[in-house]
Length: 125
Image (cartoon, rainbow, N blue to C red):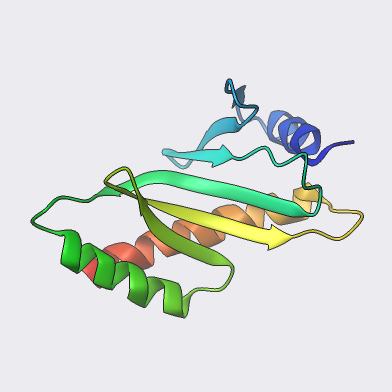
């Protein structure tokens, strides 16, 4: 089974309401936040879950936000934050073994991304 199929099945069995976008990505909500699993079925060893649009970047706050991103990235494991289209996105990225179990990966990924967002907000304020 492809990783994207496993992710979709896991989310449905856990009561999420995932939607598949036009690129095969899986969008779902968790604790009032939006998440996007990026379909990398051509690279079966790569798992990427994102938390998009977690903070708006403007000309007025760009330096502060970039400094906070750098500080957050240097203290987080497996997560990275970056600016995409004037918004901060958080990424959880790992390499998978030959028998990945998404039911173990996804809950931890969600917690890490939520923690990265919290740490970013703390570093901004």
